[in-house]
Length: 142
Image (cartoon, rainbow, N blue to C red; front, side, top):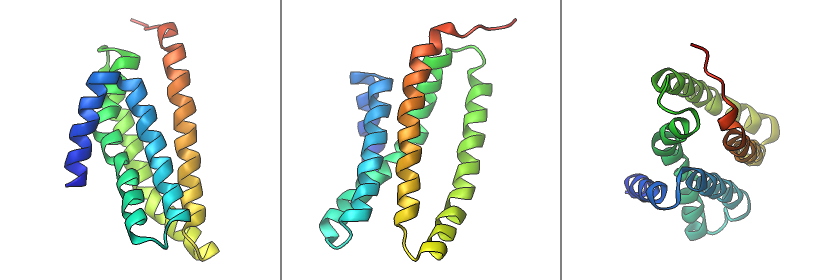
């Protein structure tokens, strides 16, 4: 229910406030989810709220990423660029659980993995900003 609701809500938000702001909101929500996992794990209600925030990453990948790519790169070569983005998402999706497991085995806690997740989201915030600032400078070779 949360997944469907989130995708509908984020689709609506993309239309109302724009893709860039929606992606930034989603990244911040995922960070809040990770922070909730770290600091609120003793309270089941707050942990469910943190899980909802973390779950926003599903709509970030499936709803906002194609819109973001289209807005930054335009229509030209969209399918190829989006395919590369999906390959990257798939690779991270494959490596993520292994990395989380390794970090847990190494530290005895999931907190280092949550910290890595926060770091990835922070990098995402910076990269989205850079992409929007530099998108007009793209030169297409024909």
